[in-house]
Length: 364
Image (cartoon, rainbow, N blue to C red):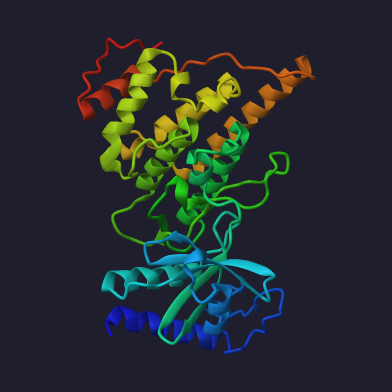
């Protein structure tokens, strides 16, 4: 057995001891709350393998809802079927897989935020290692943006989802002892709950548990990936397959060509046309463009992105209120808005990806 796997098993053993090896009765409505000096006073439950097998119909293929980097993710019901959960099963015993899984376990025991998918507990029995999370009933943002037959998300819904995800990232970057980076910011890792009302502030984005403490990622690379996500949300389809900075030329080329043409509605999801207030549209594009700036030190922090997105939502609500007061019983459409970025930024982007952009580009 490798050192990484031994370390993970030791950690789970210690965690069991901290939970007092207390057996949780299946009929309990909530997991056990067991405080400890090293772990936050929050909910962590030790599941038996029998419970996990019953919840997943003995790891039946039909229970799989996703394929994660560590292995399959199952949908299951515990507590006599009253509590639906997502169960992540470690499949690979490679050094890298076990090490990353160990890091996730340790991080999950430290993280708690309304916009992070909650860690409920774990199972370590008969050489099985399984992590249990809350289940997000509406699936991923990607599912709602890209499936062929669907009821499209409205613009304010999309803004609220982005704000929720930004809040979760802000917490990871500033709200914990050591900065935590999300290693895979994309629409399939933004999960949605069953609160489906704009008025109640529901349908907010929740970050899937794909975290890391160190590595190649930085806060600015997370912000770049979030900018790519913002463009995807606006377009209703993928901007590119990957979200690492090495793909900047493709993103920037698309942004600049849109700006140079002076009109931007061809880059908007057709379902959204006429529903985005010009003031909100301008604010949103400014945020997205700043996130994918070539120079990392000129990108905003995720906290700044969060504030700017909240402003964009407020501008949209104000504009909707005015339009509704003018036409309270009918539909209304916003005029097409245009957006341009500065000459200096165009020169910088053009220099980076060789598009030939020059200062002759109209900056008005």
